[in-house]
Length: 373
Image (cartoon, rainbow, N blue to C red; front, top):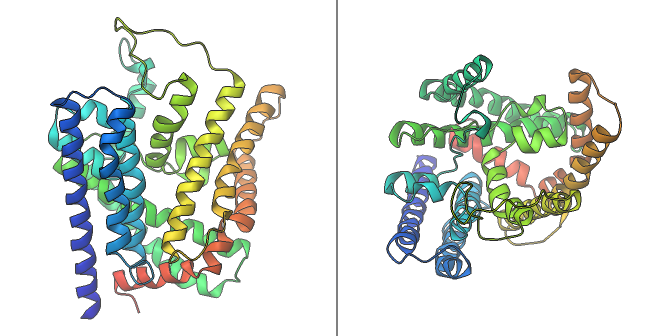
């Protein structure tokens, strides 16, 4: 029927977006390898046409009012995540730096929403503990193609539950906001699972978890740094946090090289500034996505405020942990964290979603894609 034709068209346009990203990444690779332009602002200037096209293509080829999911995925993946990977490469940072020698790996890491495995330097050499080896083995099992496919399939019943439960809950209620949170988790998890499946089976890329049981977070720091959307979190750390901490946009020489130097330990103020900059950048990125998804009608700044508010919250957690002996039992810490986050979200995250009707458009679009009545 018409719905099937529409979905087919969305898939084709998304694949064209992937092809555009691939061409831009190949161009970026030529700038790095053949032209040998060193990391820095000149390399970034040479990447600007690529960055612009990754924003303009999804913005001009998808209708966010009718193709809500395809629009959100395309604009976020190419306009934000792929662009941040290229910005990192421009300054000699991030996942793409180590992939320049392998064209296929370079393209996959750049165009797909994935986070490659990063070894803990503490365990990268020398004797490994039995617990560390067991933990890595468990991660490998969890990220195997069969486990990833099973996890993606399990997210569909969660989405169906959210779709049919949400209309029965009161707008603005704690229950509805929690329901929407599970829906967001299922959608984002499904996208990461499919991208991870392609990356691991087709390109043999070893991945890290993209989501790690976020509803078991014991603090805002634990949630943002270790459990929620580690694709975006890693990019923000590479492009925003590390340059501020190191005092240099261009990556410092690695340890062991002739030009390496040991930077001084960052002050508390510098770390707070870097953390705040990360959350502000994330908030602005989300604000632009919301503006695009709602037909360029308004900048409400609520999403910017929601994400920026996480910085003082993380700082407060750090201060309490450092200055006091206050420690909550894990179950209580989880409840406190969820309560605080859902309270902040009630006033800053969900109001623009409901006001712009984005929640209903997402529900209707997921039903269309899944063929639900």
